[in-house]
Amino acid sequence: MDKVNIADKFATFDTHWDPKVVGEIDDYEVKLVKLQGDFVWHKHDHEDEMFFVVEGTLEMAFRDGAVTLGPGEMIVVPKGIEHKPSADEECRVMLFERKGVINTGDAAETELTRRTLERI
Image (cartoon, rainbow, N blue to C red; front, side):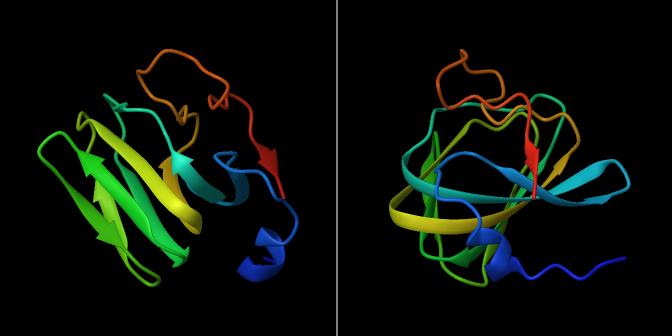
């Protein structure tokens, strides 16, 4: 039951699109990730995802439009919905996802795919 300083945890890594686990809640993981540039179009057939913007601006594209989020804002992407996150400049995001979720979902594996996540 240790407290977690989110800013300190973000300071421990510089990589983009490389989620780090900072906590667990039942069958869910709390992750921190830095985003910059475009991710891949993908969906998760069995899991919802929650994105909470800590710093910066996140654009979440959907096939029928996009939602722009700033600090203190969040979005839940329901399972089965195709989406593509992007950020023109570095954006820091907290994710809540079920354990075992692969970040690229149903998309073909790329250099952005993370199957094993570091715990910080």
